[in-house]
Image (cartoon, rainbow over all chains, first blue to last red):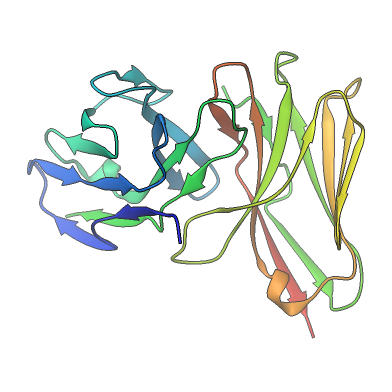
Length: 112
Length: 111
């Protein structure tokens, strides 16, 4: 069963910590995305990548960075976690030419 | 600035009746529209989609209608079932493969 796997379902971190959220897909997809989901705001795009070592800013990149060293892995980094980054983080991937995404199950991050 | 809007945060419907979810968009460059369904603690899953060259697409109990002149689409679920209780996201795509999502509508199907 093809899928997108996010390494943690729940995380609790302290303000100021550096946080790594990992995402791995086994579908050989070129494109990978990081979204955050907040009530009343839906899914907002943080960063995306069309290829290895490539990255593009989404709509809300401030406070985040990403790394894509291998095609199947896309990491989201919170350089210095803040309480306003408490959210559900969703990773997704897609194949170029396809219209939809395949999503992971999400990581619920709480910053205290 | 949100380019895809779902103005109804919630919808309650009786089992067996029709659920109608609405979505409006502002960007005329969108060429493909999708609906995703999300259960708590799970990622969104693809439900149904429609190309901008069509005005209707049907898949079993789910039908999506697109009105390009009004920049409006809707999702009809007939008949509604308890397993349909979830959050539904409308999404739209441009040429760059990025999806823009609405805020979501929480559907509750009452027995």
